[in-house]
Length: 566
Picture (cartoon, rainbow, N blue to C red):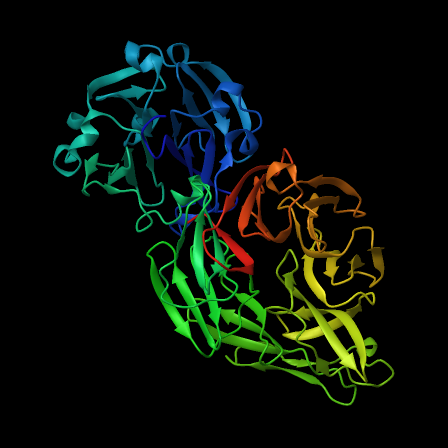
């Protein structure tokens, strides 16, 4: 262990996308930082070997330092012990594998054995070819063009203000990077950082902890994270690293918890109140009685919109979670062929909101008007990969007959476009849309199926047993399902065809265990399964095996949970 919370940090400019991307490394994992938004691109870190498979084995274990110059961007020098190579982090290409001594001749012996941090040096003309290398308390200004050292000084001699603002940093750095958009540089040591300007090599800010106030989500990205469980009427956080659980001090009771895509915000529903809790600041962000029932909310990719069906209105709510503001309510209840359903556009800035029911929804002219509250919390909602459509599972009753449907909702036009018939197998409990946006995988009370959203045909039916929950892995390659029957473990199925590939045991002592709810971390490295007896199983996705079971020391667990890196 290096003793630093960040081992290496480098920044490249993606000219094609117009992005400034920071790459933070801790041990053998990497997470990306958005300099423009000052937030993480990645909710959790991914192994270096997964991000850049071409890296040699030694570099997959960790990186000591990295350096991106304006001339070589996005190609980056990466250092590990006495070795170095060039990496294009945008496409993973690797070149010029060498040693520091061979590639950077003239460096002092300590630098040839390993570099702690590196930065481009300020300058114009010839100066743009110069860089800073750091090792221990020493700093070398190096001319890449010659190549040879220009000068060797202590870090304190080079960086004005360092001894006053961050004196411990004079003894050595863990990492350093620069934001090319602002010219600000950031030095890291242990659990702290300091900030300055590269142009005049001046440190301007006192050393401070690398925390969520300045670097929201950076450190949580490298932790195993927490799952938030509804236990004993309140939200409880289970630490996936230690297995310890404690109540989240939200001050509110809660039903099924929901977290934002970046894991920072926790949303809680209790009776007619909906609350948002900031995991970074440990403060309640807002309470709302106007926006309620967000028990099964799903989010747009950027987290700017949330969608859920209100059990009180039976409409699809479109919500801006920052407010919270109820942007629109899209009517789902009106399938009478004699009139049109209407989306109540609350902010007035949306497109036309009138919805024409499709012919198939009329069922010989009879309205499908009675919705049944047959869910523990709310009907399932899933979004298309492009975020343009929502797919809502619903259970109607017409003249005493039960009708099961998936409703396709256009989120821009704010109206139902069409409905898809489901088999007579009970209310839809969960819906998962494939990466191509063509197949909807559906878990029902008494069966499973897949619908071709292009044709409306049932693609597969009852290949899998009835399941209470199903999720596609983040790469879309596999469908993971929790059988409705007790002690069913996890079924891993092919997303194309539903063929069962593996059954994973969740219970201690090689028992299969009973899963109630399922979540993946951002990259799909781990799956987390809420267990019937009152705990959470952590499953290694690649190995398809349970690595640990954590049990919660609270008397009652709700049927759903949420994952967060915070």
